[in-house]
Length: 293
Image 1 (cartoon, helix red, strand yellow):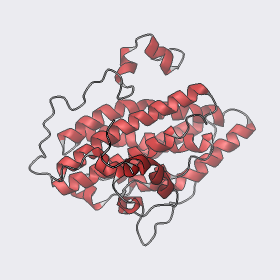
Image 2 (image 1 turned 90 degrees about the vertical axis):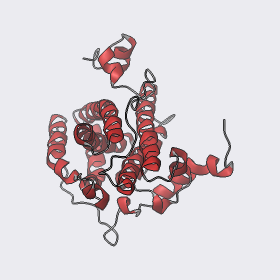
Image 3 (image 1 turned 90 degrees about the horizontal axis):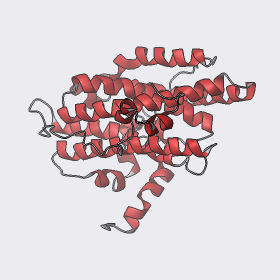
């Protein structure tokens, strides 16, 4: 249990359960310690690599969006919180993209994937790449993503075809539990606050809801690995509905955002928001290739 529902006070008081689910930097424990990194013989390395790219790109791009709240969040405390969430996701992205380079035999590093791919080569869902909008919009996006991704990681931790992916998921699900808790708390606070805050929160939910479906739409590589995110749709929607009910908000009814030629983020078809984000993310590496510090 957290002290006064405040995770930072809990950490300061030495709550070991909270520490175990906090950022990758906490304790510097290696989630892959003792894990066999050999690709299992019954797993196609190309499919595993692509799947790790899907998940890794989601985490990398949303981490970048969360970090953009530094100096812009409503309070200093929220800047710290959002930065820590971003660092969690960045840690997940590093492990996943590193595994992608191992799995396909190319030896590509996390930096190769992050800095030296073009926009159409990124496989993240469109939900994570949209501009931050206002605070309510970002909280709505975080709520949807964290709820869906936590459910997925729980499944991967228990039944992943790859032990490395299972280990990353087992560590990540502890972090996503807090991400979901944080977003849900703000959703309730805004939804059950003033008429103005409720309207802003509802508008944020209405804006991001059409992008939720992409998280449940299977890519061919996922299906070949025996993974189908569509199975998570109903339990995730039930969790979200429970949060919105407590916040006295309405579950949006808008349908999924249209795909372009049958393709979306998983196939490298993105919104106009991704290009500028990647330009900033990749600028230093491309300006000074091979530099180290």
